[in-house]
Image 1 (tube, rainbow over the protein chains, first blue to last red):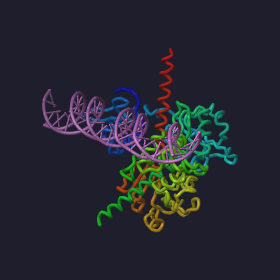
Image 2 (cartoon, chains in turn blue, yellow, brown, green):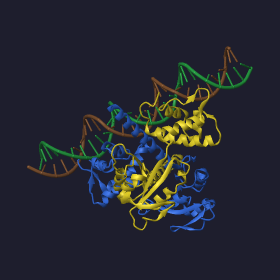
Image 3 (cartoon, each protein chain N blue to C red):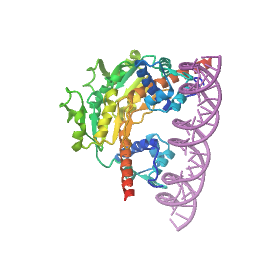
Image 4 (tube, protein in one colour):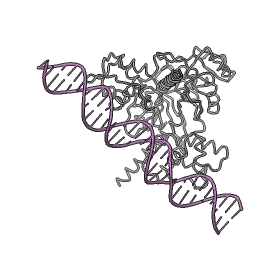
Amino acid sequence: MQPSGKAPEPTLSRLSLYLRCLRQLAKDGAKTISSAQLGSHCGVVSAQIRKDLSYFGEFGKPGTGYEVQQLLSRLTEIMQLDQEHRVAIIGAGNLGAALAGYAGFSDSPFRIVGIFDNNFNKIGRMLWDVEILDVHRLTEVNQHMRAGIGIIAVPAEAAQEVADRLVDAGVRAILNFAPSRIEVPPGVAVRHVDLTREIEVLCYHMGRVAEEQEALSDADE
Amino acid sequence: MQPSGKAPEPTLSRLSLYLRCLRQLAKDGAKTISSAQLGSHCGVVSAQIRKDLSYFGEFGKPGTGYEVQQLLSRLTEIMQLDQEHRVAIIGAGNLGAALAGYAGFSDSPFRIVGIFDNNFNKIGRMLWDVEILDVHRLTEVNQHMRAGIGIIAVPAEAAQEVADRLVDAGVRAILNFAPSRIEVPPGVAVRHVDLTREIEVLCYHMGRVAEEQEALSDADE
DNA sequence: CCGCGCCCGTGAAATAATTCACTAGCTCGT
DNA sequence: ACGAGCTAGTGAATTATTTCACGGGCGCGG
C-alpha cells in the first residue's frame, strides 16, 4: 500500500510516539529494530505498529525488521518535521510563559517566533528572548513573522476571538489550551489540550477503583 | 439502564465537557435544556449525549429535556467532583509552576496541597502560597498531606521514578506531562498530556492540507 | 381533557479502530 | 546453498464507538 487514503487519527498520534522512540534508539546506536521490539519500547503491540506504518508504505525487511535511521527519516518526512515550523503563542500568562520556555522545543523543528498578549503591562516586556507584542497587531506582525502554528494560552472567554485572529493572520494549525471549543474554517487543524477534562476523568476512575474494592470486600463476607 | 457496566473512555471525557457547559448554563439561569441544545453548545450531536448519559441512568424527561441543576449535580457526583481532591505537583520548573497557579483550579474541587522538586535551589522556596518540598520526602510528607492525585511535571528521564514515588506515597491517579511512558500498578489511573505529540500531529495535518490544495490546482489545469 | 408536537431512552445499524493469523521473504549458520 | 527461524505486510475477524431511527411518554394550547 502506498500514501493511499488517510490514516486514522490515533495512528498519527502514535507515529509521533514511534518517532520519539526511534530518536532515542538512534542515539543509542541501534541499527535495526523489529516491530515487536519497538512495541515493547513504547507500549504498543507489534501488529498495531505494522498496521500504522502500512498506511504510509513499506519500511521494513522481513527477517530483519526496520532500519532505525531510515524509518526515522521517513517518519520525520511524513510528519513534516523535516522543516522548520514557526510558532506564535498567544497569552503570556503562566501557561504561555511556560510553553514559551518548554524544553522539549529545543532541538526540535519548532521555533517560537512570537508571543502576544493584550495586557499593556506585559506588552513590550521580554519573555525568554522574545518580546511580548500586542495581540491586536498579530495579523500585521505575522506578515513577516510567518508563523504557521498558533498556541492559544488565554482564558476561555477569549479563545474564540484569538482563534479568529490567528486564522486571519494565516496560521494553519492551532493548539488550544483554553478550556473552550473554538470554530475555525476548514483547512485549519485544531487540537485541544484540556487540563480540567483530564483531571476530571482521573477522578472518575479513582471512584471506580474505590467501588470495585468495596465490592470485593463485600464479596468476602 | 442503571450504573451497569462501564462507559467507554471517550464518554467519560465528554461528561466532563457537558459538566463545563452545564455550569455555565446554570450560571446563566437556564432551567431546562434538551440534548439537542446542549449538543449545539458543546459541539456534540444529540444522540451522542443521550447515549453517553444512558450509561449512568435516566436523567431527562420526554417533552422537556433535562433539568440543568439536577443533571449538573448528578454528573458532578458521577465524576466524583462533589468531594475535594488533593493534588501534589512534582516538578517546580516552568510547567509545574504554571500548573500550580492554574486559574482553572480556583472554584474547583482540586486543591494543590504540595509541590515537590529535587533541586536544592528550589526546595524551601515558596511557589504561590505553597512551599516547595524535597521530592525524596514525598512518601513521608504525604502521610498527612494525603494527596490522591499526582501531577508529573519533570523531565522525561525522571518520570518513571517520580511515578513510582507517587504510587508509593499512596497516590491513586497520575496526570503525566512528561513525554514518557510510565508504568504503574493496576488500580492507579494515568493520563498523559503530551505537548510534542499534539504539535507533531498538527504538522502532519498541515502537510495534508497543503497536498490537497496542490492536487486541487493540478486538477484545474 | 384531548391531541399535537417535542424529546428522551435505546436497540439496531453503521462506522472506526484494533488485533488476529497467515503468507511470503530475508538472514544466518552450517 | 539450504533449511530453520524471524519478521514484515495485510486481508479478515473482532472489538469499540458513533449514529440512526423509532417507541412511548410528557407538556401545552385550545
